[in-house]
Length: 343
Ligand code: 8NA
Ligand code: MG
Ligand code: MG
Ligand code: MG
Image (cartoon, rainbow, N blue to C red):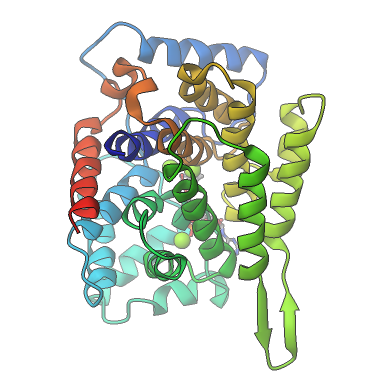
């Protein structure tokens, strides 16, 4: 299990560092060749500098991991808001934070964290952010909740998300990613029944998206519909093209159009590499970036799932070494493992 903890957080880091180089692009055949060469170089012979830089995805994941290490129900959310701001302000290079979240972190600081949730609710004319920023940083919560109930996980995902994301799409994206990681963490063998796994995620989401208000029971089908689209793509006899995948699932900064995409990247490669698990990390990393769009975040979320599934032993040692702060990420994973299994 320690290896799975390391794999999860290293997946976040490596997907982010490699994907950031191609962010916002649609990759043609030439750029896909460049991408393959680029990862080959990072996996290849050891070099000292320069290291591949991480972005907001990893920066915010580190904050979540640090605050879970000193988790206390009452102070967690405030500690996390303060850590997000500290991490944001301490960086000397641009980490590619979303526009909305940058404004929000500045407001939290200026108002001295008096109102922890108000600024997030005021984002985007009061609709709150539906960006994938809550989902991209959620993996430490899956680690922390590996032996906890669903309700505990939902509550902790909510607390971790709502500081920056008040829109239900942003928060439910984080719930989906958290559940998806936790389910593979719990597997003891490297045999994953993909159909069963998707059915379980769908069942959870049908419940989550069914609500009740003064007009009675209503059903929203945002993530449920995306997961159904994902299942259809996975069951196709002919492997869908990149264009078809992006048309159905999306590749944007919207959580609805990136979290299911990341899960699809993972599951497609699990299906393709049944007897060849050592290739799963590299293959998923390259595939997720090939889809273009929000490449750092989709690759980060997809690789985190691979790492949670296989552990860190299948990740090339030099690829780990060539990403900024990998030692710190390993240390955080090991500490989380210690506290989760000593409780
Ligand atoms: P966010 O909350 O600022 O949301 C990201 C973007 O989504 C916003 O800037 C808006 O354009 C849009 N958006 C979100 N909610 C709404 C809404 N209700 N109405 C209209 N537009 C909306 O930041 P976040 O933390 O969710 O973003 C995470 C993403 O930002 C990650 O992909 C991360 O890698 C980073 N990112 C940065 C860039 C960049 O140009 N630097 C590009 C893509 C992604
Ligand atoms: Mg980023
Ligand atoms: Mg935001
Ligand atoms: Mg991104």
